Length: 133
Ligand SMILES: [Zn+2]
Ligand SMILES: [Zn+2]
Image (cartoon, rainbow, N blue to C red; front, side):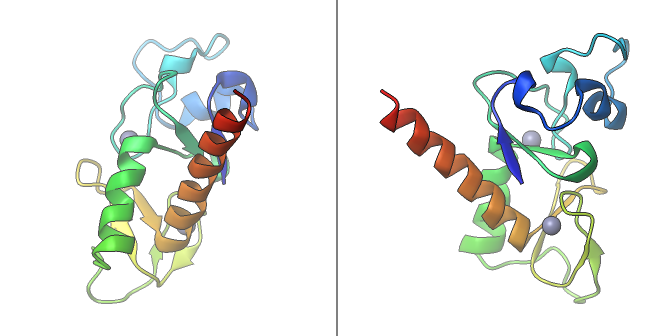
């Protein structure tokens, strides 16, 4: 789980991300930052919006991560009341812990473990930014 704040920090070439949720008209050979969309709200990535990268180019933005944290960590709620394993969009594992389902895109899930890891990555980056001043 890696926080990415600019395109050159992505672990994979940009086109791998754009291949997943590609905006209409994206040029696969010239993928730009705004062509990378959050899997959970499909909002384009911008510099003022942290994006956390999962496996195979899955991404969650800071806004969705906050919503996921509020439900799975704070409220301890789960969108999967039957307890059946659900495939997490970020780690691609079948998870039985609490899981957040995107309210807008029902195929997008993030498990409690990934919520914690991603939030830690964002917090760590904010710390780095403040100590670098
Ligand atoms: Zn989002
Ligand atoms: Zn996960």
